[in-house]
Image 1 (cartoon, rainbow, N blue to C red):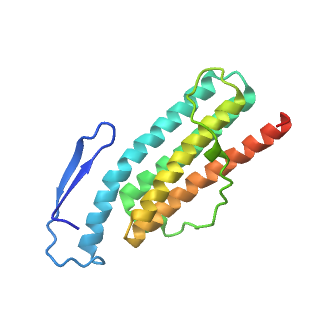
Image 2: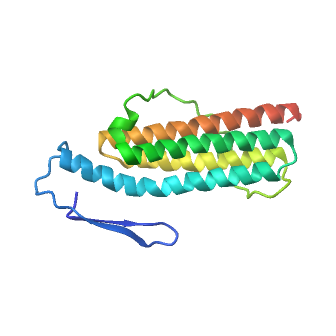
Image 3: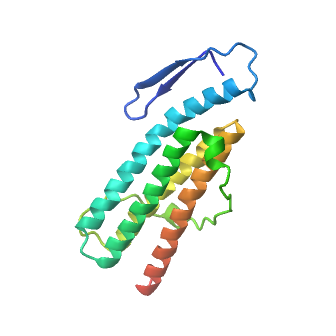
Amino acid sequence: MSDRVIIISKDPGKIVEEIEIKIPHWRDKNSQKFLAMVDRIYTILTGGEIEKEKEDIQLYENASELEESASAKKTFQELAEEERKHRELLENIEKEGVEKSLSNYNMNLINNIRRSDYLVDIKYEKGMPYRDILILAMKREEKSFKLYNDLLNQSKIEPHKKLFSLLSREEAKHKLKLETIYDDYMAKMGD
């Protein structure tokens, strides 16, 4: 860890926070001070993810209200509820830290059938076909899955690896659910 950490936002790149690291050198990566500092940095980094979850909730709630199709409305409501759970998880981690928040989480392996990998991004439009609603949702979950997986692969500290593994798995579960719904729907449509 350097003596100063500068956290920069994406699109547009602006300085979010500058943190002076006052832990003396040579730093023990297992010391409470070091882990607390890393938690603080990850809290700032994942704070943007809490905002993204809020945006996703709003998107899915708005889409649910605008949709006339009962099945599309229900799918959007379910997606909004899943995003609420993610937001609560991230907020809990922010309050209690990674270790305490994740102590009881079960890290089951989630299948990745990669259906969304072969689809293109689309934007939400009122009245869009149910198939496109599923594609929109799958692509959003795919992007989140890839983000958390990338962070997992770059992380060097065990509690944070566990955090990104958990978040990656949560997104993978949603993606798998949507891909299964999509496959079933397309099969009914004769595809």
